[in-house]
Image (tube, rainbow over all chains, first blue to last red; front, side, top):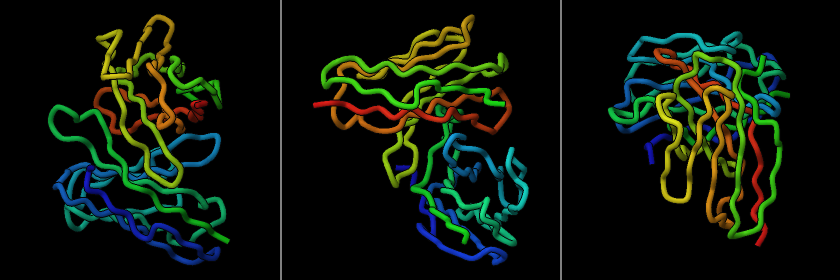
Length: 114
Length: 112
């Protein structure tokens, strides 16, 4: 158990509204990630963070922003949600020494944009 | 451009038999490979990994084989159990890159 929680677990929103998803970890991991999972695509990296206030883009970052003001929290924001952002969102943390090539995932947030 | 491919969307195997899940990749820079298992409404769970300097890694019932010349890896589950029914994703990464590149998954069903 990597001690990762995500909130909310489910959300329905309307096109054009802002949405923020939260990822919380309890084990002081430096690296945190946001992925989205869609049929036919597997999981794709949106953004990641390598420390407080240190973030970088992944392969599908358009329309998303992230923030990390504390080690334990990594926020994903959709400034103006679109139907194409309907997806399941997973947060992950990088393993510690001896497992630093592995990533461990949270339970996911199912987001529906109407 | 799907750099990691799982060409079998589904696979059914009798309980107790061997399950073999396959994965092909196109990027020769990938140097670390992982398998994840995913149940519905849960996050992916890490199963087993292999570095490109090895050709086999074993952990209990799970063995991963890597054939670098063919750019192919496979996950063997022996013996298969009902709890193994899930979607399996292979993933790959390159040294110094934080991104995991995932395949599209294979749904494994174990038949009692």
